[in-house]
Length: 262
Image 1 (cartoon, rainbow, N blue to C red):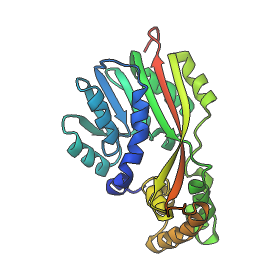
Image 2: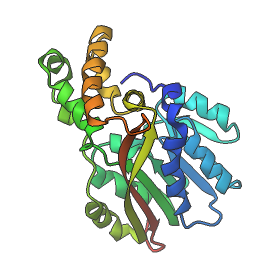
Image 3: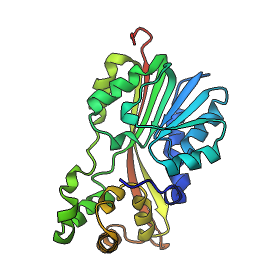
């Protein structure tokens, strides 16, 4: 994919940061020595960790140079590294591994989640938040648009653009052998946005990127126009002219068992 657009992502900074704040609020750590923010983006979630744990050695990891540049400017006291979350292994072990809205992009969670738990020191915490929105109109309509004949040849199987995350029950069973405790919950946010066009701006920075990256400039324009027609019908304006953007997310906070060998 092309590099992430940090400025576009940050148009909805408050809404995107709220799940990270609510995830961090459930982390049962007092004074972690080392914290790692996986998929740190422009550093909005990393900044929350720094505010709660000012004494922690803090590292953010992301693949995007644009996101990392924004993160370094926001939080110069932290270390930000370009790296692949799928290959992450904490050395030395971390007390907190924080993964806000990143793991949904990675495959093979049956291997990935236990591997992340193994990167923790005993008593350390894995805190994960993932969008669980593939059945929402915003994402279902991406796939419907992608199968139109004029786009399908370039995009291919739209159902493979992003794999579905597992169920809460499946994540619990994956983590239970490694965890002293697991806190898992699902929340649906209803974001109040200026109108349907704002929903398109939101997903252009995230979920739409893999679709648009496969098209040339003219095709992208056509795709967005076709998608916008569908979005306007799916998210009609409310009484005050605004739109409600429903966004389900899955949260996991797992504490590593003290008797787990690394």
